[in-house]
Length: 195
Image 1 (tube, rainbow, N blue to C red):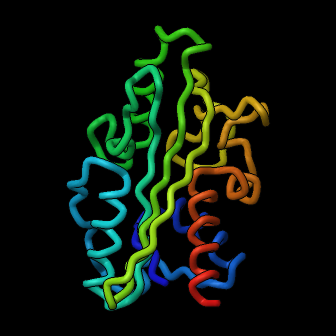
Image 2: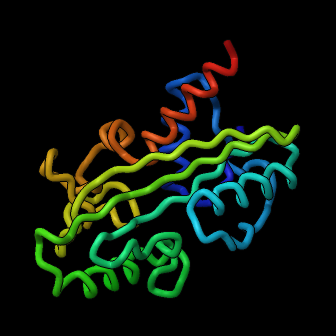
């Protein structure tokens, strides 16, 4: 299936998870030179469907899209759907993280709860769609830890593991992450569909 994203980190995670259940994820860049569609949705689910439909219509292939981000309790769910462009420029992880840390500095450590949210949408050429949602709870830390992952991962702390997302291996992250959970749910639905 076509992976409807240009984000290399998401592509690596999605390919690894799909391979575990017998699917090959092909990055859109290997099929067509297409710009990302405008994400006009107000929720992760709406944006995932916008992207999946767009890439399916442009290529004629089943397209799997993800919209995901960080929702911080003390910031009333922000950055939310604006996670990738929180500081203004799309995909500027350093600026996004700097803005997050600046906003969380005055927040007491016990009030720094947050969650990663992932919504997946798989759209087929016949119009059939499958969706799944995954959530991973954690806390925001003010000092980065780890070199793995991408985005907010160095600042997203998992108390039960005593590590940030950026300190996990890809395999560990896929087992517990929001995207991993959503992909497992979607994989189960695909398995049921093929039986």
